[in-house]
Amino acid sequence: MESIISTMAGQLGQVFVVLGAALAAGMAGSGSAWGIGIANEAAAGILTEDPKKFVSALILLALPGTQGIYGFLIAIIALRQAGIMGDASAVVTIWQGLAIGAACLPIAIAGFYSAIWQGKSSAASILLISKRPEQMGKAMVLPAMCETYAVLGLLVSFLMLRGIKVG
Image 1 (tube, rainbow, N blue to C red):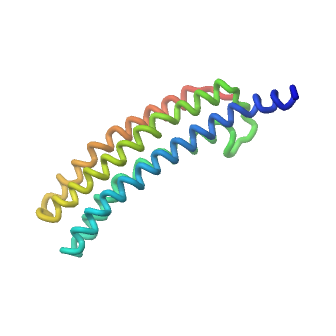
Image 2 (image 1 turned 90 degrees about the horizontal axis):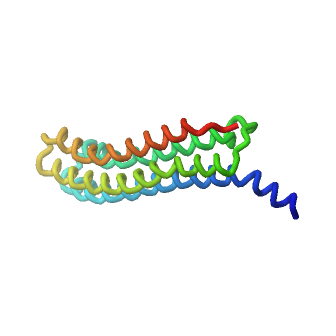
Image 3 (image 1 turned 90 degrees about the vertical axis):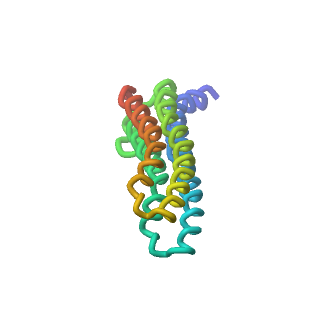
């Protein structure tokens, strides 16, 4: 029984890393899918009236997808740092695993919410270009403001991961 507990304790650090990586990729990816879906509704609406606006609408509805990429990137960095991907020689303590898992949370949370709000902003911008296609530049800036907070979440997660020493 004691060997089972010690084996579990030896692997618990990696469990926390996997949990953090799953949250980073899963939450940021879910927010991206949700945001793209919101923008897609507006795009489909304007394309019924003017199919020539497809490229402009596509650019705007793709913007919320970047948060999913950020979450995926942090998940890969966390898994590699813990030796779960690539170098399997790293030993991750429970505290290191908790720290790595926690470092994944900024992009998980900021990515989820900013992608949804960016999708709403993109939908509004898609409606803008439906009436005023010459305003495409301004229409791109508006949802890009939501992106700022996803980038901050990405940077905080990355800096936190860089500060955790494993092995």
